[in-house]
Length: 149
Image (cartoon, rainbow, N blue to C red; front, side, top):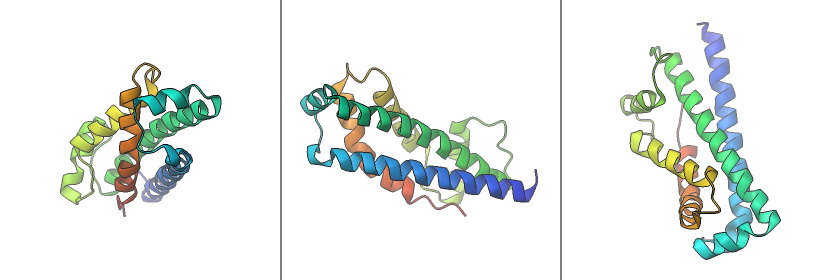
C-alpha cells in the first residue's frame, strides 16, 4: 500500500475519533446536572423525548467512536509495517502493548460492554445504562490521551 494513502487514512480516522469524542462530551455535558446517574434518573429521563434523543445520539456516537477507533488502530499498525489486514480487532488491540498505546483487551472489552449497554434495549436495563454513562466520561478522557504518531 502507498505510504501517502496510509497516512491520509490514518489522519482521517484521527479526525473522526476526535469528532466523535467531542460530540459525546457535549452530550454528556448536557446530562451533567443529573450525574451521577442511577436507575431512577435514567428511567425518568428516558420518558422525556428531548432526553431520549440525547441517549439515542450517545448510543449511536459511541458505536461510531468504537468503530473509528478500531480503524484508526488498524491504519496505525499498517503505517508501522505490521501485517494486520487479516487480524481480528482483539488481535490488533493486543498489539499496542508493543508500542505503549494505552489500549488493551480489557479496556476494549469494557468499551464493547458499555456500547452494548447503550444500544440494546436500554429501556429495560436502567442500571446498565447509568453505569455506562457514568463510566463513559472517564473512558473518553483515556481515549483522548491515546497518542498515535
